[in-house]
Amino acid sequence: MTAAQAESFFGPYFDILRRVVREAWDDWKTNPLAPQVQHKRVRASCVWNQFIAGAKRAFSEDSNVRVETMREWEGLLFHNKVFVRFKKASKALLSRNYPTPLALAYHDQQNDLFGSGVKRLELVYVLDESETELERICLVQRHREYIAWHLDLLGGGDDRQEVLPFAPQAPAGPSVAKRVLKSKRSKENGGGKHGTGGGA
Image (cartoon, rainbow, N blue to C red; front, side, top):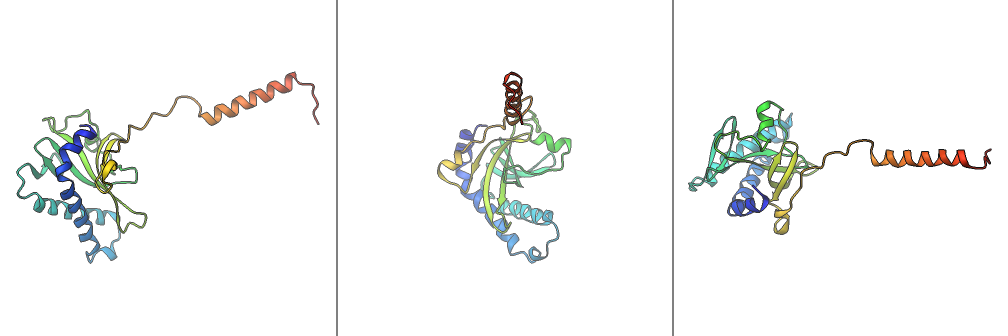
């Protein structure tokens, strides 16, 4: 699925998804557990729970969208074609998972995990530096450790179609800085051999 295809496919659902995520976060902020939380996974679990509960209500009358469990993941299945799971993400829009073989396989777009050609995406949220407010809500297609594209549900306009290409592979051999330094030293050594020898 390309970014343009996703924009067309999910466009009618952007407002609902944005609202459900915001309500899930607001539910956490007003939760009496919030001031006493001892680990971030408690917060993440609460926000995820409220998102799933809110999604069930929001899409209860839409026959094309439902909360569905596929393999070990619970998320939203759209038109029996695209499965979307909800996750907290880093600033780079990468969700964190314990790297089991199945968890890694979810992000390998070459694998047909569900045996039916169902595409896999993530709806992720990113917190601000203080971790008290939502900074971004994005629909993401990820392949392994790279973001293929994302649609920013809080950006609006052209931001929704912004595409992040796969991260380039690191060039082989020494870095540019090391090559420049090596070249400079070679020239200096060469100059010493052929110069007039006016040293100290």
